[in-house]
Length: 242
Image (cartoon, one colour):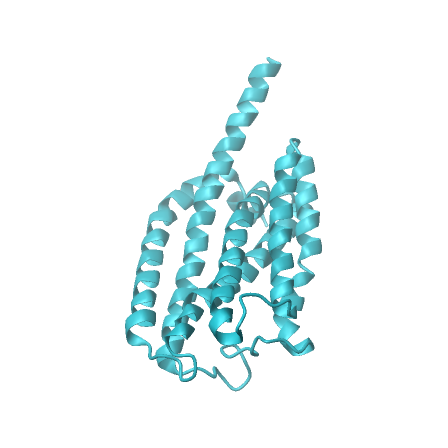
């Protein structure tokens, strides 16, 4: 546990992350670059939807990351509530805008994909509705953290909201099973293996990994800025009190 507390120190995090960040950014560029090349120039058109289905190479990784980031935010929030690790709170706060960005991207690309596929840009089916709710929870978390000036109270209120909102994650995941929706069931992570050909699966997984490392790159960058910002604010308070 002592080792974990050492890495939970903001100063230690800044020093280690400064070394990791350039490599992570480079890996992100490679994964997304190769993934886009494979998706646009190598992967064949989908049998029924043709080239329109190439939207999935942006839509699916964005949706996966939107949920993963919320899960990470909830875990970080729980870690802060239990152990009061300052870096955990910074990670949760820094994750929210990135998660909201991926969620909005998933909804917009899904809408563009829905028009030629379903004949409409938007339907209030269970999957779309639950993802939209997640977007508003992200927005609510961001607004709540900004509205409360006291750092301790802001962290606690945000952590509670994040944990309550995590109830929505299994609803999103199982919505295509529990209700009759327009979305198809899982075709990659499912019993019996992926139901998608390798030439389409490879770019999809490359972009999913690339989007994930992109999240980690933005997360570290935002955490570094937030840690420095908190230090500056603390110094100003001490100067004002002195």
